[in-house]
Length: 436
Ligand code: HSE
Image (cartoon, rainbow, N blue to C red; front, side, top):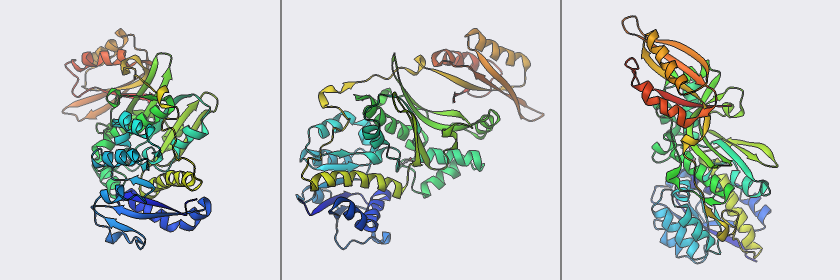
């Protein structure tokens, strides 16, 4: 039986330093629970770390990941550098030498999922990626273990803390987009490139991982329709409020008879729904299992300590196997490799939703009637109509807000260029999905 598990930690940023603190702070508890010592014996970082106040007496700090990958005493390689460059090399090299890997790298796993998961299937090591989705919420374990007997029918969630922080600040504190983003960066929530957060890309990475795990299929990231929150303005927030909703960035998938629906998009969520109450940098994931029914998990989706907690859970699970002389190997996507197939995401036009349309136009009742006529000609069933005043006396502007019953996205999108071409329409027509 192994006495000590040696960890090589690559990256000492927000999450890496959190992992280090967790293993310092909870060392006794973890030793009690695992019957062994888990020691971070090597750390590779290019960043300064003296100001972090870490207890490094049992750790060798190096600037090169080769010092970790070349050290045969390292049992688990923890990749917390992020991105798709050196991180990919670390993971593939470690798996190729049958070492276990733990990572929070959703971008890499989503964009190179086939390559990385195939490497994991071919290794005697394990690939832990709990921290890649929804920070401190153990959603991967919920699917893998808690719902192991269920067919997952649908998943919808708020899985980007930064975007949720920004939307919450705009909704509840009247803070503008840029100030809210700055604050999210200061808190360590945002990605190195915050475009990933605000344009929905980070949410899409996480959604793709959940889909691959839940449906046992590889999906092409480029097929996933993604719309972010950068075009959401104070008027959209006010309109949502008047409709009894809040705007959230949702990552959604559903398995229907026709195939797999999936997309990331801003949506108006009714105030009385559970997702509406998820604020600041929190995440929530709602799952529909065919036997378990509806389950929702809520918690901190970003930040140093919550993400470190998820990384530690994978490290501890692998350590338990190693100290019991069991193979740490886990089927990365729950089924044997030869049972994985390629999945196709249905074009968004073939899916259905209720919508809120916002048409900004010069005050003219004739044009308002024309807007409504366009919609009814397309057989789009209207649910409500609201006219808001904007502009001033010299240039009166109206904002026509129409909500629809559930209808096909293709049908609504077909009407957008027609509306846009009306002479009085003075801004891009906005379309926001509405969900219960
Ligand atoms: N930038 C991510 C977020 C970090 O804001 O949710 C956690 O994945």
